[in-house]
Amino acid sequence: MPCSLTRVVAFHATHRYDVPSWSAEENRARFGWTNDAPGHGHLYRITVTVVGPLDPTTAMVMDLAVLDAILAAEVVTPLAGRHLNAAVPEFVVGSALPTCEAIAVWCFGRVRARLPEGVSLERVRVAEDETLWADCTGPA
Image (cartoon, rainbow, N blue to C red; front, side, top):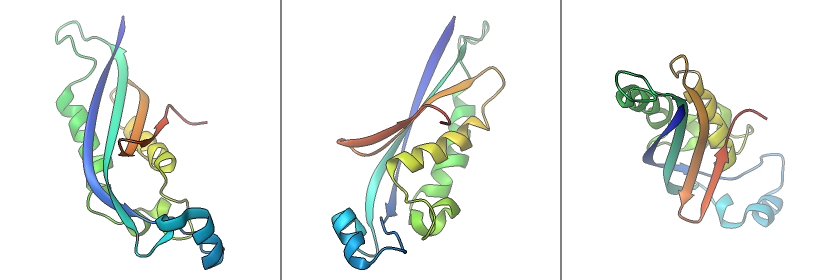
């Protein structure tokens, strides 16, 4: 019987919404204060849910230490304390905006690639605060 395991990691990071091909006025009209330079910060909370059969010996979907190591290497280390528009190639100025949705997709691909055989990634949730989050449940 498949079961799920969910882990939450948290870190501070900064981002800014700005489309270089738009005028300053259009950026301000579309994004408001989130367009202000140099950007603004959040305490991001990334929730990752994996699914798989329980191991008959350990009664685990996967070793939690392994999941924690994956999250540290693929999510926390590249994002924590960073300005996402500068530190993450996919979000550099002129690329994708580092929205909750885009960050969730980015995390999903990185985590899914590292999971052990037989374990699948069900969901990645990226929350900027208690009122705003996005879920990614796989590639579109």
